[in-house]
Image 1 (cartoon, protein in one colour):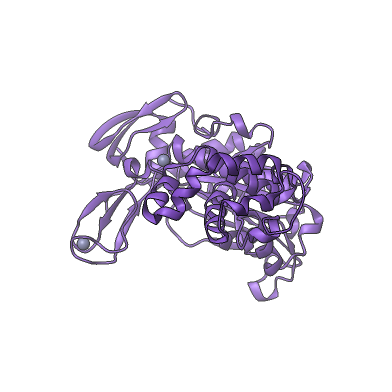
Image 2 (tube, helix red, strand yellow):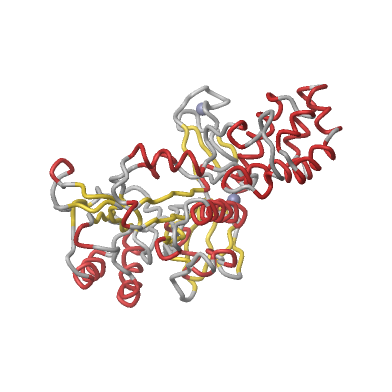
Amino acid sequence: MAEDWGSASFLEEQFRRYYKVGVGKVDPPLEMERREFGFLPFDGGVMIRHTSFSDPSQLHAFIMEKAPAHIYYSSAYYREPRSDMESKGWIGADMVFDIDADHMETPCRMNHDAWRCNLCGAEGMGRAPERCPKCGGTNLEEETWICDICLDKAKGEAQKLLDILIQDFGIPLEYLKVNFTGNRGYHIHITAPWIRGLDQRARREIVDYVTGTGMRIELLGFRPGVKGSSPLHGLGWRGRASKALYDYLAKPPPRLLEMVRSKGKRMRSIIDSRDEILRVLGEGPPSGILKYLGRESLNRLMEEAVREQAAAVDTVVTTDIHRLIRLPNTLNGKTGLIAQPVSVEELEDYDPLSSSIAFKGGEVPIYVRRAPMFRLGGEKYGPFKEELASLPLAAAIFLLCRKAARIER
Ligand SMILES: [Zn+2]
Ligand SMILES: [Zn+2]
């Protein structure tokens, strides 16, 4: 038998023990009888799909019996959730935004992520390169971890998205659900009845809006002849983009200074007339800015500034109307943490690496293959490399779920 990295049977036993008490917290989704449920077991088998439940006690009994590694439900509502895809009878779907640190560039990746070439065995830290620098092979394995920096970044993206959904779309809080995924990010659900019928194209348009895709400065009021007051108080993207531009110029990030250096004279004059540009942004009209900034430069700067304000959501997941989504208040089999609902008001102070800890218990002896330093609750652990360690249950389960360790019997 291959080495049992992750010790699946131990984890299944622990998850079952957790659900014995914790299953009551697992709230079924709205109209649960119209949803498809899916489960991934610990034994590495295939997903159990096309399941449905008519009431919470049925769902809870199933979870307690199987103790799955991952529990999902469909964002969609179906007439026949148990049928195969063709005959399910799609009625509608919630809109679920996926915010995942995997899609964000964070400096901490160099400290905690690692890659390995399956062909020649070369290794390195950070994101896997496209090709192995040693042998040129493309069969690279990537190992990703979470830390406070990436989770804070994901939270920031969630907050930007919520701001746009609340301010620009006017979505009432009662229809907005925020969930920590138990691993690398957040899911934001819109459950409003009027969102359900939107097709993929309509959802795509919403995603384009929140990501600031295809923004045109002329439509934001930055064109000759437009009169009016400061764009900073404009509604929607007009105000948001102008504010972004203002902040961007008031405190230019290193990237802008880099751009100025590489693009030469024209960009340098932007920095020189910065105070004037900031004054025009503050007093209006927005068209006044064109005196100091050519259209092309303004476009480029706006693009950069908008990127700072736009919410980084995964377009593919968000526009998928058949997607299975992690069920809130269930355990994430990749970490052992709870996929936890957070209220919009509490998000700011929410600490996922403390609040979502499911397992409390004494020390467990494990053998760790490799792990960067990580934090759970108030404690830091590691880094570890090919060594024995005795860790509190939650930390041991975290490493086992990452398949970075095995139980030492
Ligand atoms: Zn290689
Ligand atoms: Zn990180």
